[in-house]
Length: 84
Image (tube, rainbow, N blue to C red):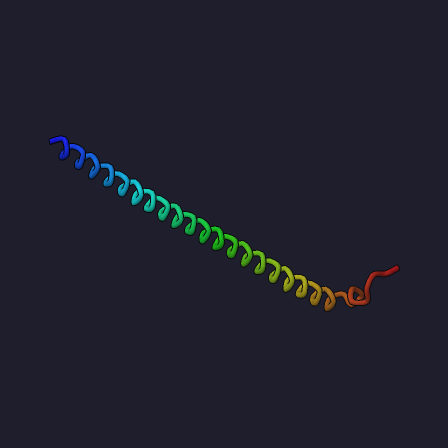
């Protein structure tokens, strides 16, 4: 009877240790997965921001080129430069 109690207690201890380790491993895997998702989302947001900035600067450059060309067509004095 005493041996049965001790063996069942030992078996329960082994089971709890195994369960604790597997639970901890699952939690760590979950946290790593979540961190990966957060990093992926942050990279995606950064890429979107950089794409928008590139488009804005590109459109701003083309707009300034268009403005310069049209200004020079309508007023040739603008192509000469500043008057001193």
